[in-house]
Length: 149
View 1 (cartoon, rainbow, N blue to C red):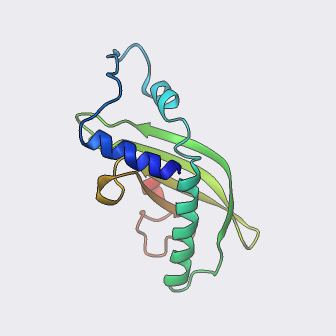
View 2 (cartoon, rainbow, N blue to C red):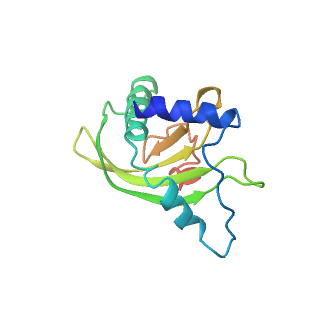
């Protein structure tokens, strides 16, 4: 239900409809991290984000040769690494996150992920990119997942 509401809100915003006009704030009034925490505090812990990572990771280990056949059982120690809000110089808002992924083999591995605002299918909803330490066999995220730190 939350995903449906998010999609509907994104569609309304894409059409230029807004529920309320935000008050302008000056840069010195509030730091970006505080604004982020007040408006979208749980991007890193959203259930749909964690489910998407788990499902896509399972697909990855099945289709990339020489990866161990494990899955993500749970996430621990989830934190927001940084938030880059959308602006004139940066059209896409990004939230960088980190956690420990508990694997089905009992091991814990570092995981880093990125939530990109408005980059879902047809620009509706958000997109998630992730990297689990030791599972980036083709160095998509620059080895040791450095692109997502």
